[in-house]
Length: 256
Image 1 (spheres, rainbow, N blue to C red):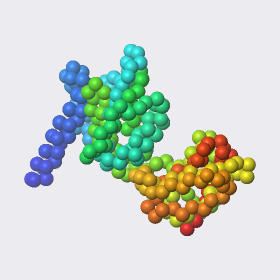
Image 2 (cartoon, rainbow, N blue to C red):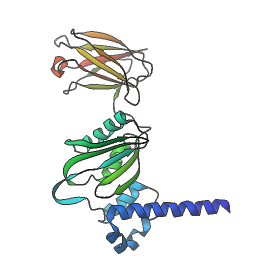
Image 3 (tube, helix red, strand yellow):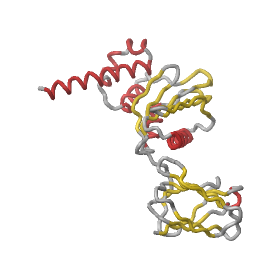
Image 4 (tube, one colour):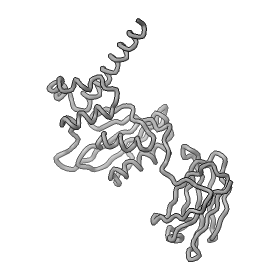
């Protein structure tokens, strides 16, 4: 009997939350007008399925008549500002947003960042959820006031960084920046082309992108052996002066 009461109570809570979320996104007028149409998702526990249903039925209106400034807000429950920001920016770049900047940042129990960007539409919440899920993040809830507010948890997220392995791997990146996953290795070998002059600038990060150590060389190097800090999760390799100094790429190898 207690179990039945608990499940009934949980169902009512989910219904209330979904009802409030849907009303927030489509507006009170549409919510009342299409209440019968919305019945199938009133108890839907999946945020993504709910939003897809709204989108498929023409109730998710995100487009404007002309470009305007929007200010989406992202609230991260895991509260790792540097890591959260990089994940967010990577996802927005993947979605085609490149010109935006933060207009408000708050750090307390949660990490909250509001961006400003010019667009012909609000950020598509369906595409955003699918994209950030691929990074290991979960969207817990979405609200819409004048702009969208996304509440996220990225505690289990990981950067898309190439894993270091115990075989030589050739890397070429026109941007001159290489992000690597240390993959548990204690040492690493980096070699550049004989035709390049590389002035190493290497940063070691923990899993939340807190800096553990920086190596910067003022003299050019062809080969360098690195001791990888114990808590290192990611390694960023670039040049101290210019990306053109090692435009022909690098060769890396992990050493136990």
